[in-house]
Image (cartoon, rainbow over all chains, first blue to last red; front, side, top):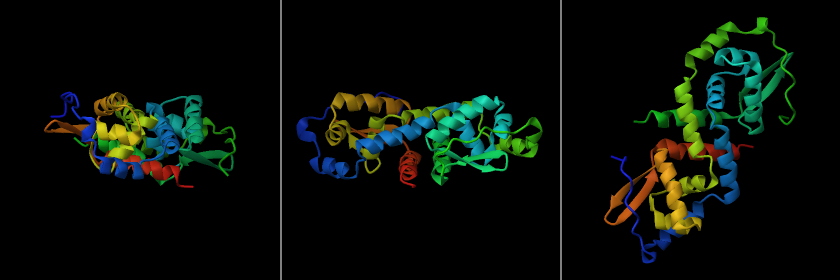
Length: 122
Length: 122
């Protein structure tokens, strides 16, 4: 039922609901926050990075195991992990000679799953 | 503590944790799902679109009120709404001569707020 194109809006200046506009402006995020948030979503807008998040959503992993699980080269996985780290979606810890990657916080886990549920919602 | 660059991974082939790799592969999303999910996040990777989602996260709005709240032209807002509609992040309903836009489902609301909480988590 939502496949049709919306009809051309016929609002006139006099139709503006000023109370609603003011109420909206009170809770609207500012430009800097919007830019930072868009940047976070941009980090998730790549299929390989989304699959890395999928892999890390259950437990931490080292680059070598990630590469084996994804069927990718270690250098390709390292490259995407660097981007994800710079964008603060993953972090790492050292243990002996190993480096383990994990999601930066629980919100990244939730972002991933909310996105999946949206895909499956109808 | 996470600002340093991770040391070069020193895993060898023999270090691969095969049980972990298999377990990861069992729950890993497939390539098509990853592409669709990345596409959803791409729709959210623009500051103006994120602000529209912010405005719609409280109540439905017509294009004219959205333009007034965001301080943008009606045509610029219409353009971004079209993208958001095509990417299934917003939908619309007609009521008389008005067209009201709303978030496509509760997951979009949650994606927006999880993203905001991630930005504020430290």
